[in-house]
Image 1 (cartoon, rainbow, N blue to C red):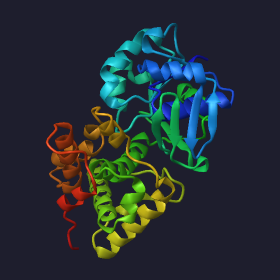
Image 2 (image 1 turned 90 degrees about the horizontal axis):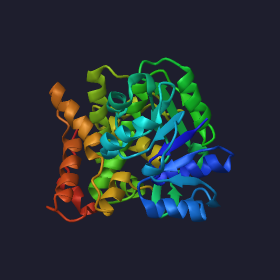
Image 3 (image 1 turned 90 degrees about the vertical axis):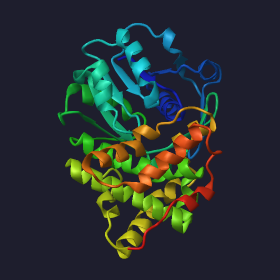
Length: 340
């Protein structure tokens, strides 16, 4: 079985290193030639909660792809999808499967390019950061490394089982028949802590340690749940024992519970900073439109105010337009936490 990871950023590099260490056969595909060269010459190194040094991997640039791939794991930024997925088409056939593990809700757009029958999706329950070419840092303890996958119609197909078999070489994997439910649950995680991380230029630990910042994150989550409710989407449990519906609140006691819920969930991710923030640091376009922007867009469709998500989008876009400097915790002054 020929398998490729399309997009060998921090998560792709970590996944490729772990799979290769466990005896899996996979090629990492990335357009950053210096990174590809480092992976081939020195192997993949993972720091943080894993200590993997110079794990031999095979890496190529997109123009070096050949033949047909049976499984393609997509870990690109969504901003690259339109070009990268069209360029992938010559290297997949009707029996191939493309699994998007990207942030946001990407399955529909991916299916429009590669076809519904070849598309499955899922969420990655662990975080990583870019250190240098060939080197990534794992922000999550290995025992919490979990991936959930599913098909667009909820069916458990041979293609989905094929993806499961590969991903099991990287950690815990579960098939879920409610893909939209797990997608919106992961979107909650991304929009709340990652959104605030991007808007404040800080780590997850700095957010949960700050009384105002963590309350803002709770409101971001609350807004998303209300949007999901209006869309008829039931959130799924993607962290064992944690029901994200508990983050919906109506009064001060409910908000206090949401704050403690977030602190409990994210205490194991303290060093992490949003991948959006990492893109901003590098001067690259980030995925804000596909994360907090999705909440704002759907809120508008249903006439639901989403002021916290809206402000996060506004701050990030102001930075990208050169209107404001790189975000800091001082941006908390722009947020108003209401009395309940």
